[in-house]
Length: 118
Image (cartoon, rainbow, N blue to C red; front, side, top):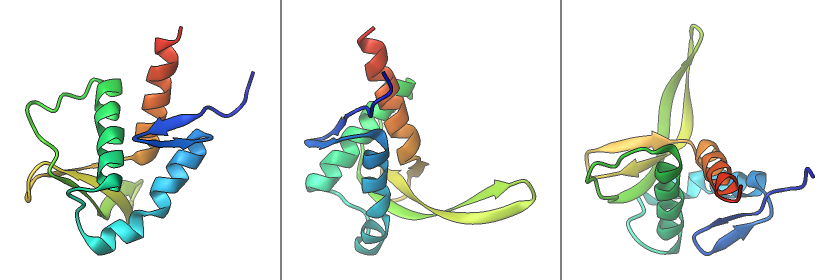
């Protein structure tokens, strides 16, 4: 009981949820510098992550198509304090985007897959 849960996203396998989250979080600055990703291997991984996250949480895309992925700051409030956090954004068009949490996405995917095995 208790060991790390392996996670596979796209063609990449991680030894643990923490490893998967760290990998994507460590690449935020690079993605922010290059601008929205619209193709390539990393785009495919992020798309797999996001689509499986939507499936696991029953989030309906309602016909929206993923245009790209970017990284930018998002203001968040904690109590009376506001701070900006660097996070991933899924782009549905050049003007429509939605932030999402890699940590929550990985957790939801692992939880959904564990439920499938019960």
